Length: 241
Length: 200
Figure (cartoon, each protein chain N blue to C red):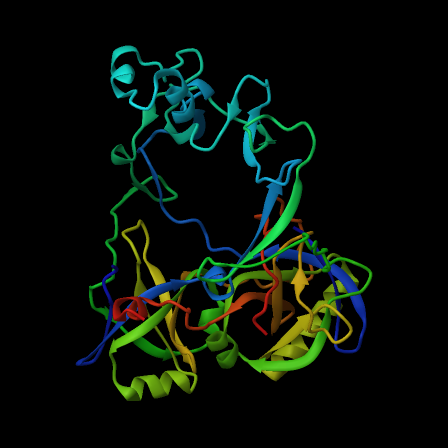
């Protein structure tokens, strides 16, 4: 994900500044007092221990064979720590493929039904490119924004030198006076979705600015969804709808 | 089925059926399917770097181990705070009345590091609270969907589509002074995926 953003202010002046994700401090975790624990991925079965392989070797009813001779346990391999791996693909007959597969894109409706199949459409990162992310000129009150949109991520803008400190401080001061969120985005009008990495999720961006003495706080709130009633809620299910 | 969210304010009690919502539930998802040379779906697998094991779905497991390499089950583990002190597990708040506080400033919602969103279907509610919420009032209450080690905060908001709870932990940004040095943060979660955002 990009750690900087090329941003233009309301006057069209632009600069590239830093981005820092805002996360809550980590809370309590599971563990054992006074001991350091390690989370590890390990081998639980080998190819010879899969249902398919066992069925092929012993037939469908191989339960007794598991009890008698533990054919699914490969003492040399089971329990081995698995660190880095390489992604590979098996063709429809289960053979390892030595060339890249072809990809298609499947769009699914919220209920899981298929909507469309198509050639994959790639999206490009647009936050740190030649054309800056712009102010749309549209302001939204905080009350309206929080009741309409789900903001799952937020990023803080940070200056990278003295000039960009002035640039960001001025933006924060201007937005603070409006007591609203400025909708920012890609494209000429600043209303296009913001994409932080190739094929990344498209977000709507809402910028808030605050100042205190000689410091500032500029935050981009990112929304990937509206707050809407889901097509299937529990009451509908229980009502048999 | 999950128990309802029960909220109290003075001598009044409100209850809601709760449904977690996310983007997939509202707009659907986009998946990329690999196809082999004859156009049939492929299976994704992993190869260990030494080439010794081909890992299909279900062939690996994961867990906690101590420094001697012995596995530690979840039942043996306890909650520990950042100083290593034992903390008690907090039960789910579903089905248990929680005090409704507010109205609070809408800016508090922006301070949240949001964990999840819920659609709340009113089971028992007064019209006056609904009207107040739809006019932009925001209330908050303590919320834990399932038992956990820390209590989260939920903000109650409403729009023409219904009532929603926005759940998370407070995480306001920092004030930035001129002397602050910007250090890029590595390792932010990748957010590659899915569907165009059709929300607006």
